[in-house]
Image 1 (cartoon, rainbow, N blue to C red):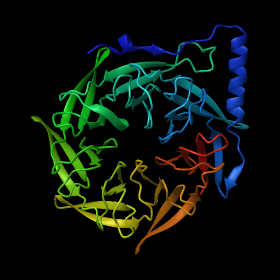
Image 2: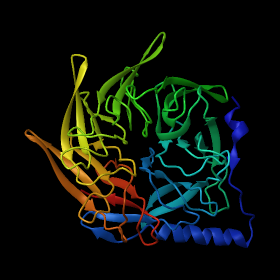
Image 3: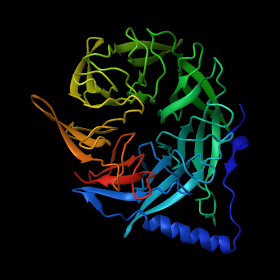
Amino acid sequence: MASPQQHAIRVLEIPRTGAVRMALAMTLVLTWAGTSAAQGPGYNVIFNFTGGSDGGNPMAALTFDKAGHLYGTATHGTANGYGTIFRLRKIASGWAFTPLYRFLGGNDGGFPMDAVTVGTDGSLYGNSPTPNGGDFGVVFNAKPGVRPSPSIFGGWTEYVLHNFTGHSNDGAAPLGPVVFDEKGNLYGTTSSDGVCGDGTVYKLTPSGNSWILSLLHTFCSAGDGQHPQSGVILDKPGNLYGTTYEGGHFGMGTVFELSSSGAGWSEKILYTFSGVADGGLPSGGLVFDPSGNLYGTTSTGGTNNGGTVFMLTPSNGSWTLTTLYDFTAKNLDGRSGNLVLDSEGNLYGTRKYEGQYGEGAAFKLTHSGVGWTYSSLHDFTGGVDGGNPMDGLIFDASGNLYGTASQGGSNSYGVAYVIRP
């Protein structure tokens, strides 16, 4: 495999002329665009995307670094239309927005749909499902430049760690954020190809200046699971857990575990969805609580046929599913956002098409001794407050929640927002 340095892609910088002044002026515009007024009790838009150099239609969750900066991806926008990686930095007057990298739609990828992961060195890791000439996709590492860039972009460089080929020993169309283990290896999923064309779970191992890909599992046949649309998570022993959107005994998706042994990795199906009362087509990822229970969402099924929030509880080698909440609106054309837990065990998330206006909702599920109670943190209108959130929420140190909505806002290209419960 070629090294990341051989795949370095840099944003073209503007010479120090009048274009620099224009770029600086645009940076100020982008900064002040993040200081919107509150759109409801506890809800504030912190940035309105324009669909231009800043990007547009963010579909991914946001990510914090140790300094409290927010990072994310916009799926569309820029002159090329292939999307951006961006940073939001807290300042006295609001949030300062900086586009760090614009995708070119070639070997660097394009149309990023997932959250980035912050590495131990502070650089960003993620994937992009669509390079030019096919939907095979890349895994990338974005790093800041040695010196500040005079261009409107932050002068970051993208290094391609792996370029998927769509072959049986590789995979195609990576979806879901990547995750590190304690040794610095990266793990993720592809939604298609592999031996049977049903997707893979992969591992990228650093080796000098290169990254070596190995397939841990290739999904084959309906009974196994098919087409994962989210990444994987690790437990303390290093086992991997995830969902497949389809497959299983009823064709409505699965929850799986991959365990490592000296001979390789073995898969265990923890649950297969029926698409009826238990839900079906889980497109979001999973989250653990401190007791080892798993939580996730489905896109359809349940009492209202609008999908569910579920919990899987381990007991003596098997797992028992409990439905915690039944949504009212199907979410078949967009991935469900991942859930997040607070210190008291309450769940938070977003849901496209849910809510009072059918434009999505950010919600809380409160745990009590007798069950779980749903409360809306914000019902999106599709107007200046945004609409159709596609991914989940994250907490800051003060307990505030941050996320993105893929549509709406002042410019109709989506927003980044904060909720203060």
